[in-house]
Length: 205
Ligand SMILES: [Zn+2]
Ligand SMILES: [Zn+2]
Image 1 (cartoon, helix red, strand yellow):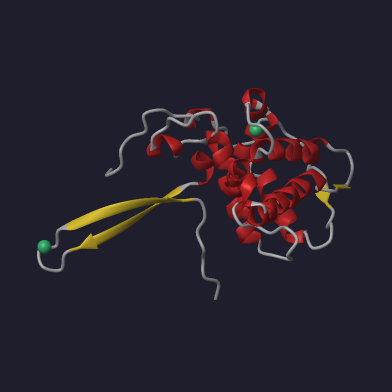
Image 2: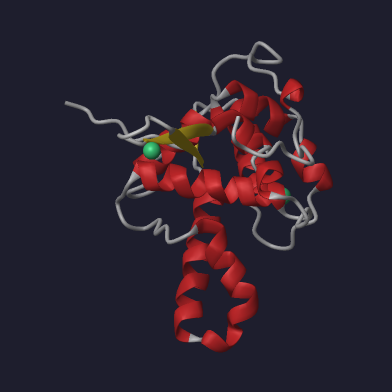
């Protein structure tokens, strides 16, 4: 209510399977490559989110992905397959971290060599201001990863209206809608505003 219905639905909700398509034993653990334990935590949470893992394992994304260069969905697809199909007790999440480092490098390049801008500006938008080498913030990494995956789902469909953009598989799984209501103290009339979010910060006391 109060939002325009989407014109197109990149990923219809009925195609999402909330429980594991196959029974499988737990996949490989992840080695800490320096100060990357917080990345590992987030990667493992995403790997064991059944609707996301089902989708990534089905390779529906990469079969139709025309993205040149970095694509967070393709990176995650490789990562989840590697973890869940590996017979090793732990693997090194090298690909994910290498790609993030590479993003970071491009970001620096953009600052110091602004003539290269066009292409690099898109890379900057892909992963935001995330800095993988700083011992850091799992929350920030999750936020950047989800929005990079969402953007990867949208590439190739630039004509989508705002509410259709909210129906990628990433938004279908992780999105919530925040309703802000302003009520007039005089006549009690209210107006509502809706904002989509992919994460909620909770206070821990
Ligand atoms: Zn891709
Ligand atoms: Zn009023």
